[in-house]
Amino acid sequence: MPLIETQNITKRFGELEVLKGISLTVQKGETICVIGPSGAGKSTFLRALNHLESITSGKIIIDGEVLDDRENGINKSILTKQQESDILLEMGMVFQRFNIFPHKTVLENVALAPEKVRKVSKADAEKRARDLLETVGLTDKTDVYPAKLSGGQLQRVAIARALAMDPKIMLFDEPTSALDPELVGEVLNVIRKLAQDGMTMLIVTHEIGFARDVADSIVFMADGLILEQAPPAEIFANPKNEKTKSFLQAVL
Image 1 (cartoon, rainbow, N blue to C red):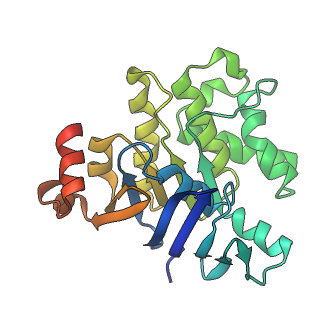
Image 2 (tube, rainbow, N blue to C red):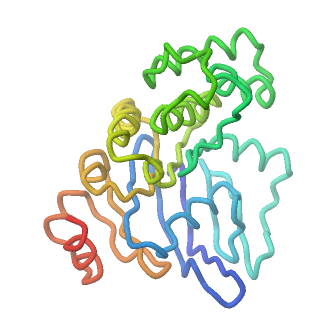
């Protein structure tokens, strides 16, 4: 059973149709990278998965549970609000911007959600937070406030914070786009390790070389559609769609 399945999802903003029927499956342990030009609908698709945007029509199924079954904006899913919330907690998300609480230390930022939402004890939440900060290479920053951190360090805190909720799935929305070039590598290395450890991930990225290295499958989106999906070796060596070819020639 896929951990993520979307069936023909669409999204309209008034007259503008941003997603035009997106169908995709993500298996457990799979890393899928979504590439494509600006305005393709990549971020909207990702945000629709965890209800930061509501879809207009189609189905979103997370780990076998129908999260959305919409027609003309009306959700026919029979989940209760609590069931919906429980499913959404299975998806961690890392954004372009870090969204770190400036008045809390690194440790407090990572431990807060498990303590408040999962009702984990403060001691257990902080132990888990310390373990995760070691994973992302920030053991020396536990008591530091965000204002003292670089962009790359802030994004690694954001990744640790998402992982602290023990999600089954990680969603990354252009996680390096707000970073200076010299800081990109430290964030990509953390994501690369997650891939090696078998975390299920859907990554919207413009880091084409990284996508080629870590992805099990590359999805090319343009004009609100998935135009091509294939393993990296295939899509980079022999893209089938003309728009994929043009895009890759421009960025490589």
